[in-house]
Image (tube, rainbow, N blue to C red; front, side, top):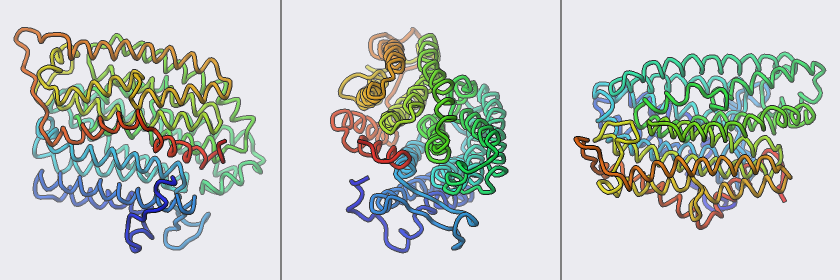
Length: 507
């Protein structure tokens, strides 16, 4: 985080409350968007609320760079009795990532909503988007296990409705939203049961306090059961294999803004809580956590990377292809987490950042084309590269990054992940990454071959360029992917800072 140490991004009266304003800002903006007189004003409020959250995330990153840890006690009630917000290297990275993607998604939404959502629902749609952003920012900045559940539900409530709104374009959005609602509710129930077990064993919900009391708890089975419930609940939210059944439908049939935002942020926020509990809260319980990660997490992560990459190859709908790809990439990230080492976690964090950027870019490009084509089949995109080069060149960059082609962020992140696995002696993880990368190359090749080298079917609707307002965020992500593929010092530093926050100094 040293890159942020020399610059203070906000005046003192905002900086003092920046960690809370991360979530409160979008929440207030969401209320304003719901009351906005029209879709354009709601769109501008959405951009302002997201940008404000990103601004506060930059300030929090500065404060963390200066002091390593920022703790904010609501109402002056100190932990463990009051509600606290807490920021360190890893939460600052997640806050930056979530708010950055949200700002670009909000900018992109001005054109996508007109084609995909009934105009009378635009204001409520933007309000739901900001509600989801507030929940995600709260998840990664709260210092309390139960409040993490509250923010988890805040983000989920907005998401369920936003996916269902896609029924204006595709009726399959309604069952997809219902499936997500059921699975999300089960996941939240598992999580809160696990938190209840921890409270019964330790008498506290504060995360820092839990980390101190868990090693001293006499009810070992209760603590271990609590961890298992929490991980299963968060695993459902993070779409970890084999708990990912809700994700393909949610990504395939929701409006473009939602699959752009969800693919880059929602599963990542759940992964943050898994990392926080595994390394920080339960870290002292080394024997139990080691066994859990070695014999359950790591095999499932490797299976996800390989099986879901293979499933993606045979998909005919492009969004479902990318949805299965997301589950596979979560598996790669979890291989780094399951190593329970600082260098492994840093590799996983590097790939997490790369995946967020490239997956948001891919869904933006697809959304930009479907504004005109309204197709979901891969065949509907035949020849799109020649008809809409300004839209599909970023798509190609994202696909090449996903496949791990050199000079892209995706190549650098996979290389860092492989290096970390080799340093920890985890040869099987390296094999899983290599096999998954080969399979990824196959389905990315399918997409690129269709988009750039095939001709449209007779009678197919003509593909047109996305509007300029949608091209701007798309090209920002494309240029970031290339830049970080050439000079990866900033994401590398952020990944090591995040890992060091929960593990300690990394050599």
